[in-house]
Length: 286
Image 1: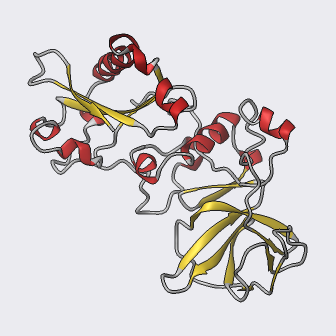
Image 2 (image 1 turned 120 degrees about the vertical axis):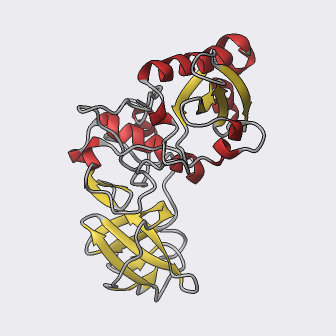
């Protein structure tokens, strides 16, 4: 039911999706090919935080672990000087000497970075990706999947949570409680699933028209997807909250203008009083 532009890929039986960037260095040549080849999923700049364990370099994934580790495999024994790469086992490039670490999977590790809160930072080898606590090797995934998740993890946490999809390559493997699983409204009916594909097509076309033709300053749509039922915008008192499932849909939209200016996804709310009425835009903003 969900349609995605550019990096967003329509999930169907044969569709693929989701993987994560492993961090790591990008030289100028790799950076140029990153947009066209998912085999290079390194960040634009090499992260400062690295650890060397079992003769493998791990890079900070930029997020905490999905599931709290229940064991430790050792502690960080030494720290490199001047931001140099670690070269010895149990060595890190940042101040974490004595911190416990654990191996989560082949190519994935975690380091306790905040003892008071029990926070573990996720580290990945450059050939490994992660989605919702599931680890895979990049070679196991399609280029579209790698590109999509590279984009997925560039989103804010709230925008990631608004995506109600599980990629086919991760289907049936996501731990219970994952935010990637479709959530429903209080009524028990999912807002996106309450509409037919024809209704979704019509409302998305209206959103596309608004950002492309009606307000030309937005310069068109770069990415668009239906907001999940858990999105609080559906319960905006006096506006969206007046409409129930089947008569409202909210899209998260990244316009070309916002992408260039570094702005977050905005929303556009489209609703109707009843199934016999026309769809209308009732609200839009950040």
